[in-house]
Amino acid sequence: MLSRPRSTIANAARVFATILLAAAVAVAGSVTALAQGVSVVRDAEIEALVRDYARPIFKAAGLANDGIDIVLVNDSSFNAFVTGRRLFINTGALMTAETPNEIIGVIAHEAGHIAGGHQQKLREQLERAKTMAIIATLLGAGAMVAGATTNSRGLAGAGMGVAAGGGEMAQRSILAYQRTEEITADRSAITYLNATGQSGMGMLKTFHRFQTALSLSGAQVDPYRISHPMPQDRIANLEVLVKQSPNVDKLDPPTLQQRHDMMRVKIAVYMEGQAAAARLMQKMRGSMAALYGDAQSTYLYGNLASALIKTNALIKAQPKNAYFQELRGDILMKANKPKDAADAYAKAVSLDPARSGLLPVSLGQALMAVGTPDSLKKAVVQINNGLGRDKENSTGYRYLAQAYGELGDIPGAELATAEGHFYSGDYKDAKIFAMRAQQQMKRGEPRWIRAQDIINYKSSGKSQ
Ligand SMILES: [Zn+2]
Image (cartoon, rainbow, N blue to C red; front, side, top):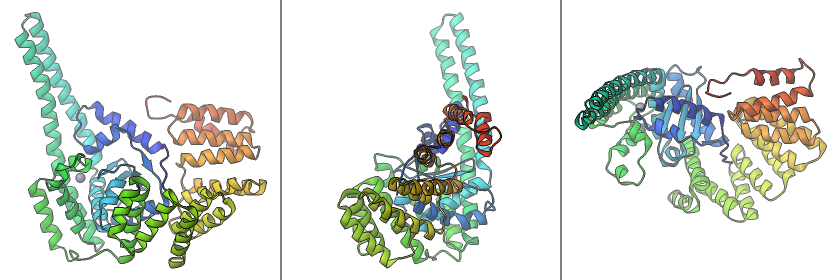
C-alpha cells in the first residue's frame, strides 16, 4: 500500500531549505521543491526496487557504507536530488522512466554529486554568494543614503541598481560553479555504470528528453531540468562517453524490467488516478504489470470480491511475491476480514526479501483489528518489530500507542506517542509526552531512559 505520512524527513528538508533560501539565491530546482515542503511517500515494494537500483551504483561510488537513505517524494514532476545523506526521487520520475536503466542513470549521476561532496561545496558556494550579495546590498544602501542626503531621486535609483546587479552577479557565479559540478557528476556516473556493467543510454535518454522543446511546452517545468542545466555541449560530451562503453547496448534484466513496470502501474493507480492508470496499462496489455494494475485499480475503485479474485490469480502466478500478499491483505482489511488480512500480511512479511519495516506494521494493524487480548499482544510485537527495522515511521508509533492503550499500558502508550512526535520533528510535544510517560515508570528502567533521551534531545532547528 502506498501511504503518505508526515515525516521527519520532510521536516529536516524544510529546515535545510530555510538555510539555503536565506542565501536568497534560488538556483537549484531542489531548493524550490524543498521550500514548498516535501511530501514523502512510503511503499515497501517501491522502496525495495529503488534500493536495488541504487545498491550496485553506491558500491561502485564507494558509498556502500555511508547509509544513504532513499526517500520517495509524492510529486508528479520529474526530479531527483540530494540533501546530506538522503537521495530524494519523485514518484513522477519513477513513473515517467520506461526502463530501470533510466532511473539507474539518474541515481548514478546523483551518486556522482554525493561522492564528489558537491552538496557541501554548494553550501560553501552559497555562503560566499550570500556574502557577495550582502556586500552588493551594502554598496547599494550606501549609494541610496548618499542619494537621500542630496535629495536626489536619480542617485537613489542608482543605488537600487547596484543592489540588484550584485545579486545577479552572485547568481552567475553559482551557475558557473554548478556547470562544472554537472560535468563531473556525468563523468562519475559513467564510471559507476561501467563498473557495474550497465549502459548509460538511460541517462542519456532522460537528459535528451529535458533538452527537447517538448518538455518546455508543458504547463509544468520539471524541477530536474532547472537544477540540471543541459547545454548542447554537455549532452554531446556525455553521448561520446556513453557510446564508447562496451555496455552501451546492454538491456535491463527482464525480471527487473517487470518489477519496474509494476512500480509504474502502481504509482499510476494510487497517485495519478484511474484514467492515467488505464492509459499506462493499455500500453502494457497482457503483462503481469497490467494485471497487477487492474487488481489494484479494482481494489481502490471497484469491487472488493473481484479485486480478491484478481489478486489470488497474481499470487498463483508468483507465489513468492511479497507485495501480492500485501495487496491481498489490504483488500481483506477493507472487506473487514482482519483475521484473513493478518494471514496475508504475515506471508508478505515472511516473503519480503528487503525486510521492510512497513509490512510488520500492516500486520500489526490487522492484528489490532482482530481485537482479542492475545492478538493485541501480537500486534505490539509486530509493530515494534517493524519500528525496529525502520525507526522513522511516525505512523507506526500511532498504532503502537493505540495498541498499548487498549492493553492498558498507559506509560507505554505515552512513550509511543512521544516517539511519534519525535520522528515527525515535533520535539515540543515529544517532550511533553515523554515526561508524562516517565511519571508512571520506574526511574532508570529502559523505557524511562528512552523517554529521558527524548527530553534531553537538542534539535538543531530554531525551536525545541
Ligand atoms: Zn546534477
